[in-house]
Amino acid sequence: MGEINFSIVIPTWNRSSLVGCLLESLYQDRKRYRNGKTEVLVIDNSEGEEKASIAASCRQYDAQYIESVESVRKKRNLGIDLAQYEHILFIDSDVTVKPGLLDSHAAGYREQEEKLGGTFGLTEFVGKKSFWWKILELTSFVDSFGFAKQFPYVSWTIGNNVSFRKNVLLEIGKFEENLPFKLGGDDLDMSYRVTKAGYLIKTVPEAVTYHSRDTWNCWKAVNDRSKRWGSMEYHILKRHPELAHRRLPMTGDIVAFFLLVFGGASLLTHSLAPLAFWGIWCLMLYLMAFGHYVGKNGRTNPFYWTIAMFLQGKYRFHRLVMSLKNKDFSLAFQGQYFGIFHIRSDFQENAKKAWLYCDSMALLIIVMLIYKWIAC
Image (cartoon, rainbow, N blue to C red; front, side):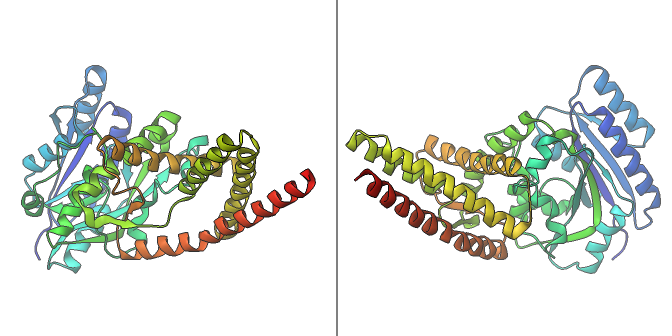
């Protein structure tokens, strides 16, 4: 294999300081790269001082500044269309690159040419750990950023630190521009279509980008992602039903079901006692679930963990809301997975947690019997 040339596509909006840091780190890595030629395309829709600052950084660090519309998907597709080289590397504007990133992606292509559609690197988070970041670490929201150090190949990727052959992207139809939300889901959808077309996506954990935590460090950012990703999961699974796999009911599902049961009992008996028992059961289940988590992962802040579990539930809630809007309950107890090993490990973990429901209900029955005995 001869030269491996990269067109690096960076969609952005109003992140001039972050873009400047990224372009500087890329400029240094491009100077080190000896395996081919490179170009950088910054696709931006900023205005005023932000636009001027980003354009100035492009001039300083040998990047092309390209004006575009607001849509991230259209920006990425424009980058694909304008790219002059055969390998297109997508990088988010809120990261910097570790030296050797381009060499690592190139090595991935050299090591395996046949049916290799793309390479996927590692994203590590840097910067101050805010209140919200400490909560996010306890969720699954950031898991996909670390796929590259867990698996040799992946079925789908995020949109950062990932490269594809241009001919493959054109073959599968590039990024879908007509998804319901402006952000989210398009990277998963596009990269999974690469897999469905018969190509492999090889991980290259030595290719590292450092992602700033600044763009995640507030309630709005966390809440928006929870809502957007949960809602988009419904649409992704409808587009790719083979990614959906039935799982055991989650804790939130069980709690909601028994709320209906005990609530109905309260109405029938004209007493708040059944709802009080439901509250006692919820408390016992919460303590047992927290104990299970600590036993598996080590000590953690219970306040952070509680909010993290709420966010996980909120993610699934928005998927359910989207299902209700479309009058479709087929995904009520299904989840999205990225591979067979994920399916197996997730099911095994939930099977282990099933004893929590049984034991907590057994304890509740004991409490109810004691209450009945005292009342008599």
